[in-house]
Amino acid sequence: MMSNTGNRVTQGQFSFLPDLTDAQITAQIKYALKNGWAVSIEYTDDPHPRNTYWEMYGNPMFDLRDPAGILLEINECRKTFPRHYVRVMAFNSTRGIESPAMSFIVNRPDEEPGFGLTRQEGPGRQIHYTVTSYAAQKPEGERYS
Amino acid sequence: MSESIDLKAIWNESGVQAVLDKLDAELIGLAPVKKRIREIASLLVVDKVRRDLSLAAGAPSLHMSFTGNPGTGKTTVAMRMADLLHRLGYSRTGHLVAVTRDDLVGQYIGHTAPKTKEVLKKAMGGVLFIDEAYYLYKPENERDYGQEAIEILLQVMENNRDDLVVILAGYKDRMETFFRSNPGMSSRIAHHIDFPDYRDDELVAIGELILKDWNYALAPRAKKVFLSYIEHRRTQPHFANARSIRNALDRARLRQARRLLEQGGAVDKSALETIEPEDILESRVLAGVPSTQPNKERA
Image (cartoon, rainbow over all chains, first blue to last red; front, side, top):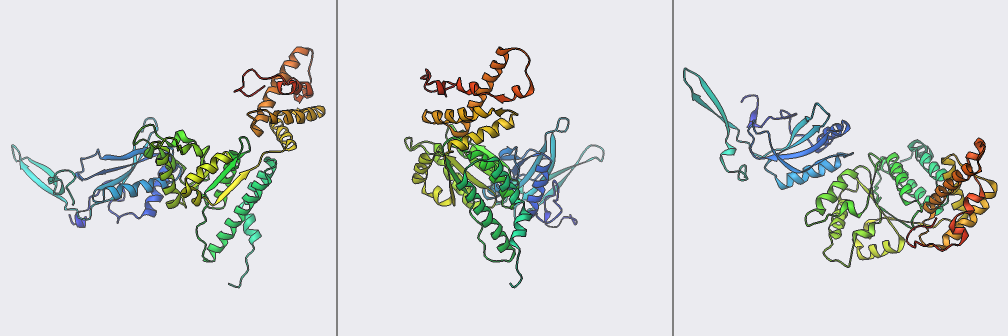
């Protein structure tokens, strides 16, 4: 895509921007904590946009007062999965909302091969489109290595 | 640098004096502790000025150990310390997370690390207060998970010095054994503060302060009785300084209420808020009756 050089995966907040620095991540988490949202860290190596359930890294973190603890955990996750996508999620547990309020990527593979588009001809000139990640053609855990 | 700096102004501006004044007003005695806290506060203020002038000021190590007998005000001082550090900008949130061994050490293999880390994460930006810290280390059981918690703690104390201040508390002799067997812990703690026992007259003053909080007061004659109560109580087992005083006054209140009901008739406001000598005299401590339950605190 012309608007997305380097095939960078664009999911969640800030994904069209350059990677956030640790100070920027800290500021975002501070905002989440100020609102009383529980922050958790998730990772995956399947970048497909419909892959909404990422693996959780550690436990969700409740009752925190300061972003330093979360940044610690983010760095640990980056160390464990240096070539995975890692995202930070803030969950709003207010009755009636109960859904993620924030979600942004904090770590991505060095090389992102991007997605291939498959067109399938259906009955009567219908066309079905399928998006496949080139990276996801390898088995889990061996992608982006 | 030729310009001079008004340290006093910076001191006043930081609001530290207010915390120290509050400490002086609300905590009786503890002169060595207060002196030490004042010294730490001064160092932090000077350090801050030095940093503003880009003079080398290594991040001060603020981890502390509070040793002393039960009821000498370790937790209370720790709470004030958190407030103080927050005002000086050495702690971002100024909250205190108080934990004991149970909150840090897990029950089975692999349980300790996440548990300890969770507590540490909660305390980030504030102060972590570990009460009776010597329980973390149990030399008689080499497979005890406490050692694991200590190692994680040490690592965070070293690497996240800017994020977290750890205060260990406990009885003096047992803390010394703990530090002797964990030299790494001892060397990472810059401030060892010892809380002395209260003198009898200090305990009376504390008692009066507690009563004032409850809107009670000692009758003039009761003060003397109370002093002799403290003298006797001190010689008995399980004496816990200010905590024993609080408990004694709680029971004096019970006796006062019973006395007022038994004497019948009308009572005025001053009768309701005065503890009379007989309320204290009835205590078993003064009657010299040996307790039938040695493990319970005597009434």
